[in-house]
Length: 153
Image (cartoon, rainbow, N blue to C red):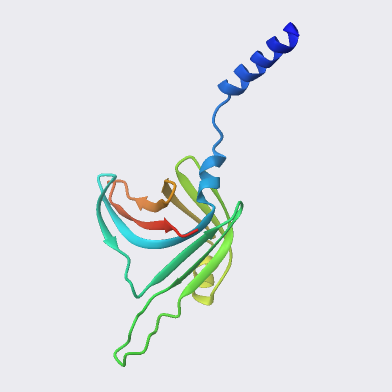
């Protein structure tokens, strides 16, 4: 009985000292996300948040390994005809440290033109909380912008 208790205590101590798993960010990203705004950055810090155009819709869906996004907005020409045909794409993804990597597979025509140029990996910094996340890019001066999403499901 004494050996069993010592073994249990040692096993618990080893488990408690193990480094945290990075998969928790990936698991936290699973779900449906609705874009609600754009965040402008200066000096590497958020400076201003602009609400996303109510005439536009951008959703992202994440499972354990796959993602999909759908976007459509309104872009009226001089005749009042909506010329924004929208776009969508999908593939696999992973979160490493503070970065999100989306590996594109398929998409709509205008989306496919983008990835045909050889740029099939989309990499951005990510800031993730339980009900919101931001994907953003900054230049060497810390200036940039990010997309703000709210969890739908």
